[in-house]
Image (cartoon, rainbow over all chains, first blue to last red; front, top):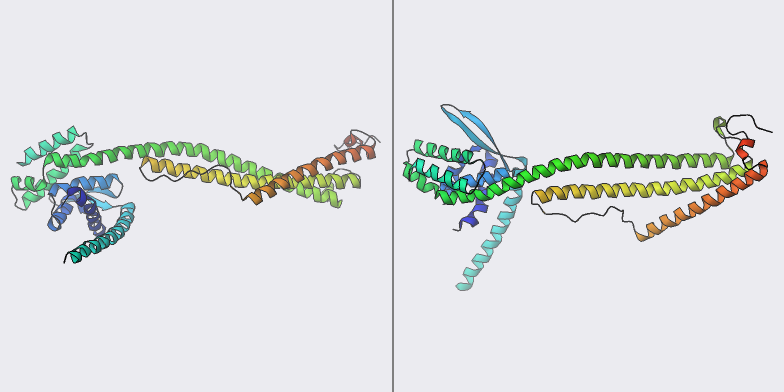
Amino acid sequence: MNIQYKKGVLELCVLSLLKKHDCYGYEISDYLSKHIDIADGTVYPILRKLRSEGLLTTYMQEESGGPPRKYYSLTKLGRETYEKERAEYLNFAKKVEILLEDENNDEK
Amino acid sequence: MMRSEFLSKLAVELKKNSVPDADEIINEYEQHFAFKMADGYSEEEIAAKLGNPAELASQFESAGEDRKSGGRRATTAIGLGFIDIFAGAFFILLMAWEIIMAAFSICNAVAAVCLVGGLSPWSILPHLPRLSGVVFGLSLAALSVLSATGCIYFALFIRQLMRSYSRFHQNALAAASGRPILPSLGIYPRLPAKTNRRIRTLALFSVALFTACFVLGMIISMISSGSLEFWHTWGWFGYKPFI
C-alpha cells in the first residue's frame, strides 16, 4: 500500500494508542508494526510531526536499570483532534467500503 | 547494514535535509536498536526492518517545516501580545470617553428636568426667571437627547471595533499556523437602514432644537435682565447682584 496514503491513517492509530496510555517511542513502533505492515522506522517521523503540531508532548522517565525513556503523551488538543478525526475517518471508510463493494456486485 | 552504519547514514541524511534536533532523532533510533537487540534480533535484521535511512530522513523534512512555522507562530503570538497591550489601552480610552458622554447626557437630562419643572434641589441652580428657565431647560433636554444618541452609536462603534480587532487577532494567529482565515470585519457598526435613518433624524432634530432654544433663551434672558451679560445681573457666580 502507498506509504503517503498510510501515513495519515497511521497518525490516527498513534493517537488512538496514546489515548489509552502514555507510551515510549519503541512501544508505539512495536505496537504498530505488529498490526500494520510498515517499516519500523516510519513511526518516529510521525511522532515528531504530531509533537510539532502540538498534539503530543514528551517527558523523560527513569526506568529501573536503564537509561531514562522518552514518553509520549496526548495533549488536550491531541485528544480533541483524535476524537474529531476518528469520527471523520470511520465515516469516510464506511462510504468507501460501500462504493468498493458496489463495484464488485456490478462485475458479478 | 550494521547499527553504526545505519545511524551514521541517518545522521548524514538528516543533516543534508537540515532537520532540526537531529541528535534527538538519532537517540530515538538508538533506543529502538537497544530494545530490539534485547529481544534477540540481530543488528542487520533491525536495520532492514527500520527501512532505508535516506527515505526515513526525508520523512522528517516536513516535520522540519512544521517546526519553522511553529517558530513563526511564536513570533506572531509575541507580536500580537504587544499590539494587544496598546489596543487594550486604546479600548479603555474609548470606553472612558463613552462613560463621559453618558454622564454628560444624564447631567443634561437632570438639569433640563429641574429647569423646566422650576426645581432647584439644594439651591444648586442659579437665579433664573421662569420663562428663561423653561427655554434653557428645553435646550438642555435636546442636548441630552443628542448626547444620548451619540452615546448609543459610539457604544455600537466600540463593540464593532473590538469585534473587528479580535477577528484580526484570530486571523493573524491562523495565518501563522496555517489554519484557514476568516473574512475580516469592518470597523463601523452595520445597522439596519431604518435605524440609521432614525438615529440621523433624531440627531439633526435635537441639534436644531438645542440651537434654537439656546439662542431664544439667551435673547429672553437678555431682555428680561436688561443686560447683554445677564449672568452678572443675576449674580450667578457668587458675588452680589449689581441691582
